[in-house]
Picture 1 (cartoon, rainbow, N blue to C red):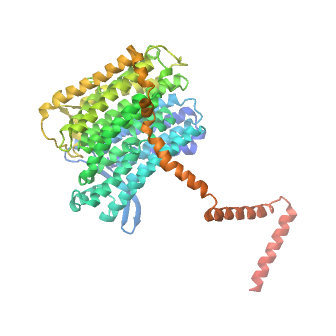
Picture 2: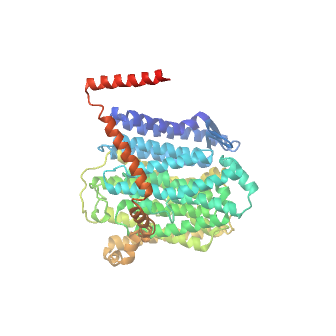
Picture 3: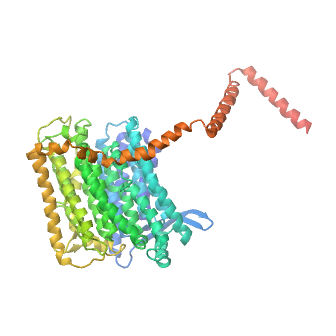
Length: 625
């Protein structure tokens, strides 16, 4: 078992090294097999280890393996060591299996791209870094994986770097997430200084034993870790990088949004849930931030024209639901929605990638239309993904995962009717923008004709993800429908069970309300975007719609408050003492370079003379001593 745990992240890293060092000597077919096959093997190993894990429950709840000593300096002793429990197993499954499907799709999507080998090398490094993040048994190794996914997001968002806007989007993502990462590393320092260890389990045990709930040190540390989570998971106020991250290829968007980077913040909070339980103010802030983010992003998604930006804001909103669940102590509900969200969001991004590719890089949904009959597989799978995103009742996985969060947002001890209302309004917005996207993109008159039809490598992953977007939710059914709790029974071996205020009898009423809300949103979208599209025109041209389309003005605000002042200070401080000193050193180096390079003139007589003079100087020095 220990060997398999090590191999799960090791194989993607090995594939990355092979492609990075020898990729230019390999054919595209070989690159595709190595890049995709490595993730497929990791996925198979995850399934094997899952079977063994299930068989060992409840006697054994986790497995640990130490590979080698990494750091031994004073009191700081850190190993490269992994730990697998129910929480990390769920994340490993999503990262490897969904990642594998995205890699299969990528072979067809990137077939003609000149950076084919570089793309798969980066993607393998991305998967490997995320696996290190979720398997690490100490918070410093987790931070290494955390920064690894940050690096890979920079490389992949700016993959088509010849376009300046893509480079800007990559830098923006890297810098904004560094803000959160700085807060996180300070929090890690505080934990180490107080407890003398970086092992996550030891930290949580000592924190619960030594820190009083609500103490200032617990609140400060939890708030700093939350800062890291907000940056990686694109939650308020650090959400602005994610819509611009659509500059990368569509498989990258699917991987970032469904299986890797933006879910890292959810994992961090769930993994360190004991610390957040000791800081109830911070945990309440998580719920509030999640509620506000899901509303803000929902309104923004409803105003977008770019197909991928709609899905980007949708991801911000759905991660907001996960944060809402974490904030009210519904830990397993947050992780369940993470898994289901990975299925339908990967499906939607891959489907969007097909649409954009066959329409010759057209992103504007209002320049699409009429694709329903021309690409039936893409249409029906995209419809299933949108239905699951909208939480279409009973028949989609998204209904069961989102319904749990909405119920606990009201019924948990820290829940409230206000949090539930925020979630239910967000559900209405989700159904509305999801089917707005469907009706405008796939129905009506065709405005751009497809230049080709996608192959099986691109459609096969869509079908698998569509099936998971429907049937994946049946592992967790409420008592009013099926009373199946396979997922929560698994995850509750690692995470505490949510405590409710009672009133389970009213759960069916709340489920009915959420179902009605989802159906209402779909009907409104049908009415104003398909049956009578003129009804949406006044709003589409309004200032408030433009405000939502621009992300509520956050980019403009940050540009005015942070970016422009720094650029201005840099301009007026251009030739200060330090600049002159550095310029002087560089000029001195250039001066000596020119003088020394002039001696390399290719004249043998000059070389012999120099050699004789040098020998004479050395002998004179030696004899004079």
